[in-house]
Image (cartoon, rainbow, N blue to C red; front, side, top):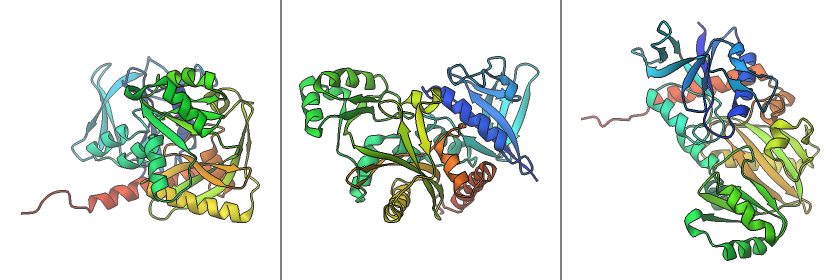
Length: 366
C-alpha cells in the first residue's frame, strides 16, 4: 500500500525561494509507485497552503520570482484520530487529506533549526532528516565548531560575539589577529546569507552590521586559502559517504547569488580530483562529524583543503538543497544512488528512526 508523503516547503526565512526549488525536484522525483506526494507550502506569513499541483507554484523557472500561489487553500495541520497527520481546511467547501510521512525541506530559520522537527515530533509523525537536536546544532555555526573542536576535528580559527558585546575597536582587533582576509558570518543562517569576505580593517564594521541583520550572534573566521570541497552523508547508525565535489566560485566566495541565481556563479567539479589518502581521511572526518553533531538521515559536509594540505571542516548542512544544481543529490548520483532512490532511502530512514523511538519508554511505570 502506498504511503502519503507531504513535502513541506517555503517558510519565513530568506531561503524561501530556494526551498520551493528543492520541493519541486523532490515532488517530481518521488517514486510514484511507492508514494503519493502532496505539496504543502508555507507562505511568507507562516500559513500552511495545500497546492493541488505544480501549477500552484508561480514562476517556476525564475529563481528570484518563484513563489507559492496565494490562490492555494490555507490548511491547518492536526493530529488525526488514527495517529496520522491531517491537513484540514474549513473554507472553500471544507476538505482534509491525510499523510503518513513528512519530507520537510524548509531551508533556514524555522525549518532547518529544529523548529519544524519539534512540531512534527509533537504530532508524532515520521519525517526525513535530522531530528530536533541535530538540526539545532547544525544550524548554529558557533555551537557546531565548538563541538567539533572538542571532538578533535579540525576547524579554522574563529571568534564569536553577540550584539550585546558590540565593541568596534575589539572587533577590528580580533579580525587583525585572525589575519585578513576573514569571513564575517551570522551564526544561524544558511545559503551564505549575511556573509561577507573582509579584506582589511576598514571593511570589518560594515560586514558586522550586515551580519547582525540576520542573527544576534556572529562569527569572524580566518580565511583559508585553498580548495572548497563537499561530500554527502546518508544514514542513521550505518553512515555512508559519497564521492567529493569541488566548488570554484566565480565570485569572491560561494555566495547566495553564486549558488542559486547566477548559472555561471560557480564551477562545480564532481567527482573532485583528490589524493587517495586525503580523500579517505576526509571521509572518516565526515562520518565522525555526522555522529558528533547528532545528525540523522542526511547532511552535506563542507571542507577546506588548504594549499599546505591541511583539512578543515567548514560547515555541516542538515537540510541540504535539492535544486537542479545542488551538490547533495548530484554527488549521490555520481556515487550510484539515483535521485529517486535517494528520496526513497531518506523516507525509509525517517520511518526507521520513528519506529525505533516508539520502542523507547517515555513514561514512568508504577
